[in-house]
Image (tube, rainbow, N blue to C red; front, side, top):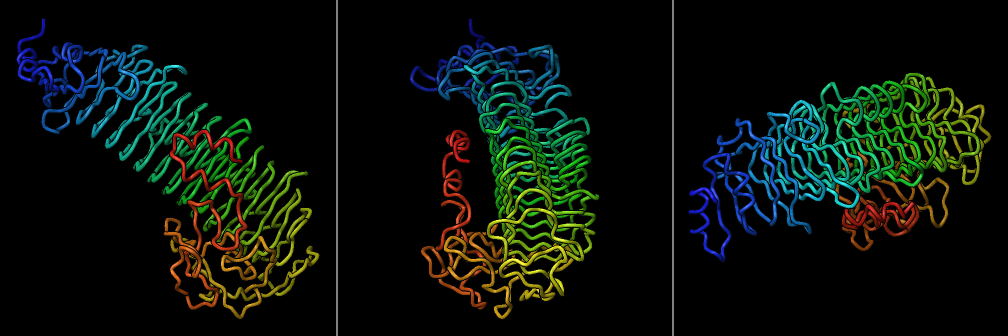
Length: 573
């Protein structure tokens, strides 16, 4: 029989209308849930249940909402949900504070939510305070995954917010302090507009996220500061899980092992796509201040990084089997600690439109294994003060349309092939170990319209060429390799089909070249017909007007809904 208070509420609700049931005793909670009809609302007064040692175990038979009576977070401890309706008709938890105060969850742990296979939960404007052992425990299966969607939340603690197996997790517009967002095996995760404030000293790997065999991982509009782990993957560690990371700012990430930003280990079928990512102050203890990867197709577009420190071969990026494409980016302020910057036992390796400056203790920028193929093009590399012994070594590489300040070091012992040529060496003469290719020349004057770049890496920027300098329209040019305005390629980071003339604004707007469809028709007074923001991304990561650049299928990924992209992502490589 229903308690009198619940019976009165149901009678007044009427048979055709959703009822609002207000609890007066925590012991009514289970009964209220069992008796609720479709669309009913169960209200919990703040302070009624939060400190009570009870462990509600509920089976939800229809779509209901459990919320605070007045919008002030109402505490519910140790909530276990054994079943909810399928098809997205789960339970809504709104304006609640979910806590744990007893070992009542699966495995005799203290968790804030214990979700059984197939359970679907929507969290709206909730406060999440995990215990010292467990946050949300999601125990899904491959045939009955758990679905957790949160929109508007705050979470703090020292353990993963969500852990478990076969969970489909979507976290939007929330803040996470001192903890990982998730540690999942199987399932998928979407993080959007998340503010992440550091991790506890006990986190071994993946300061924000650790995942194994996930179908999809997408993180967009993340702001993270102070991610730190004792082993690998300062921010993210993934095994056999595709990744999309975009529109993200990371301030401070540290790995005691490899991969200050990312550690990725795949089987050769996974992709990792990074677009518009800004990194400031990342380090690693044994290798790769930015990314350590094995068995991934890694594709980077618009990554800016400053104040980095790495150790071990591949002090910037260390790469095993797979491939690497990095187009449009800046690295300023990097200590390589006597190891090669990019170490690649992978093929192909493609580096385009990169600006590298203020480097210390870097013996060589790129080293590849024998038989691997690479490309370094349209880049400005300043190794003055780096004590570099060579620019590149090993493998076969195309080296063209670059501005290179080698400061006494040689170009290196790689086998230079294909389009090699059109390089501007910022010195009085060509390097002693260089056999001049077509269009190569030496001139200490870089021809930058705005003078030398500031040594202050806190002021990012990209130099613009003076039209009277021989590097202007002086690079290797073919029909598929021209500047966006269809003129001959300029030499250095400011030229070629994938040029970004606003490298300092990684999150800036993108438009088309002046006079092109979608362009603004303006000019920058420099005579190149560009206005400083002349590329489009959503339509295919391509330059306007003349084509060239990256493979056409890649940019289409960014126009698909994320749930569809996780499949398409594996097919476009």
